[in-house]
Length: 357
Image (cartoon, rainbow, N blue to C red; front, side, top):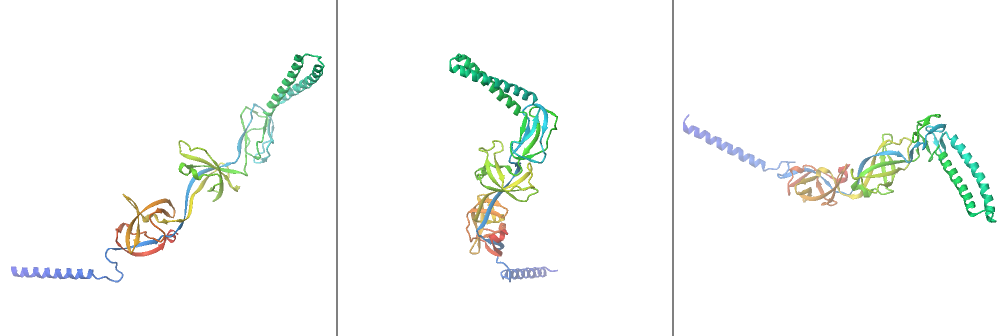
């Protein structure tokens, strides 16, 4: 093949390529039906509407009987009477346990007899003293002996009372730990008594929420047996625990359910804030950059990066405390492809309340 032929073929190839390239450029400049303009992005958006915002935290708690004590004897002795009906209600002041006290009762009778005789002596001495029949020292000695016997009787009665265990309040007896006839040492556990018609919850909250824990505030809680119940805060510690930085709080269960068992664990729901005019948008609509947080707001069909200050998060989204207003259109998808001033093509536009449903 001659050189002229080769040159001719090369020229034909170049001309053909140029024609094809020119045709492609012309076709690319034509807008086909449904095709987006170059530089625009199809995105989803929401129109910001006022929303209900509730900020809750969940903390563990424990259910307790409002009053619960261990029944113990103050002195050692043999049980001669036992009245601990397990699972039964007893009234305040009911005698539950009696220890042997015959020796104390005998001593008491002896002192009471001595007191009776000494009282008669004192009465005679008083009459004699009035007519100067005895000296003042004799009169005062008779009076002192009478007072001493009275004090000895009071001491002995106190010792006898220590052999009795009484119900400190109306409550239900738990499992007894002794039997009649047993010898129990001092401070031995005899059983328990607790109130079941009144329950309380003890729980702890982080320090930053301590100001919210006011007496009279309502909380809700749930257990494995009861899906929801309510309690009222009655008190809290006056200081935060130095190690955990938590504040201990106590609440009284409003309407105790028979399924609520003292000693069981529960989950306490604390509502820290509730507003009807909050601005809440989906979390993915917030762009985090080095110089702050932004949302992309649509203005005149173009994307504009707007700095915002965010508030608390919830299951429904994130609160915007400052930066956008009710009625603004906020982009929620395709954010990573957008640049300042880029034209927007909407796939869907909803209200913020619809987006969160």
